[in-house]
Length: 195
Image (tube, rainbow, N blue to C red; front, side, top):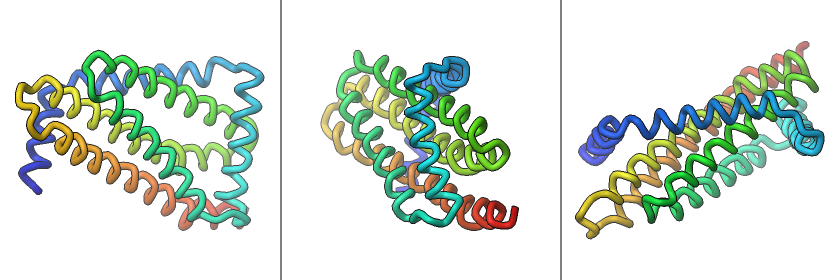
């Protein structure tokens, strides 16, 4: 297992330009999400942001349900990336998905900060941003590995290798959700109840 992980790390280091391009797409999407304020998008974001805030900080919602919703979103994204990884020509669509993920994250940041000021910023930074960065790291690593596997001449274990790489992405999503749960449970909920 350790040799498999070390071989994946070598592949990502060899094709480091792809994770860098994914990071740029995420940051550009985030900036566009902050700058571009469409009224319909703002109301969509604000409705979901208020529901997230109520579930996360007030204690009226279940953290398990919140975590399952976030995990389900990440699993759907990984499924989309898995389907898009069967052709090298579909790689630009993966960049579009990451750009849109950054755009949504930027819109959520604006809504959280304008609606809830300091507590919204803390919730965004400690819960949403950390989980989204872990998820984006998994997406970039998977896309890089799938791109390298698609270029290989040996097609024998291609789907198996992609599924193992997808398992790594799932672990990244679990790490992000665990960090989100810890931040909300041990830091954000107690602080918001006392202030």
